[in-house]
Image (cartoon, rainbow, N blue to C red; front, side):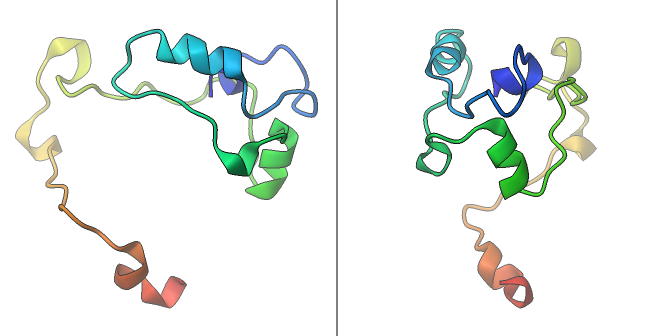
Length: 98
């Protein structure tokens, strides 16, 4: 994902899976790690844009994610918290969409 936000080439030249960027991300001690996805092997960002019929942009327009402690280390308000179920099957919940 790092390459989406800091492109140096055209989307037609940039590979979705960039092993060097995966190593950079994974070496930064984040709570999650990146890894390759077979769907995107040997595909460019232009391919991904077409595949998802998406208007990928080379500018960072995505707001920062809140951490578990909230913004600036302040705990989020109780109304901002949600209960995440142990299980969720989107296919059952939205069977009319499958």
